[in-house]
View 1 (cartoon, rainbow, N blue to C red):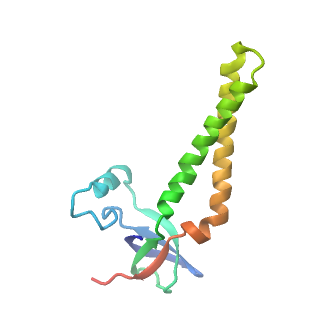
View 2: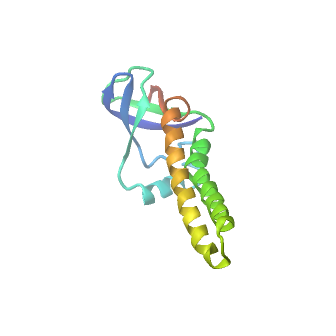
View 3: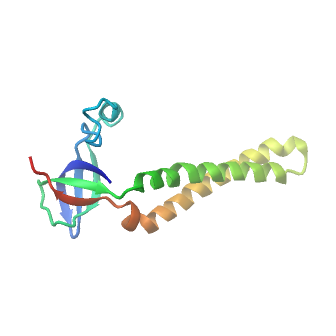
Length: 146
């Protein structure tokens, strides 16, 4: 399970808008020099805000620990990157095979790749909207104790 410390910015029913501390990485390896916190500082200059399931009914201003289910990050990466890439390649192959003349293969492959990539992004978005609440939704596990 991946966890990070965050501050609740706003609450909305059973959900809360939290602002993650961008400098701490995953808190597992920040002391071991894996570089996650340095990469976070380099690419994420402003704090990230996201919606989390507020299972403990924490209030605005509370420091909490936000968790993501085991494997959710890897599934999300596969959904966002690998699915469109695979459909891009399949579209290029189908476009190449569907060309009537050899001179047209590149144009058909390019058009098929664009259609496949677009379909991959649309399909990934559709899947993520259907499953966001169950598999990929971060949730607040506990209040931060110093």
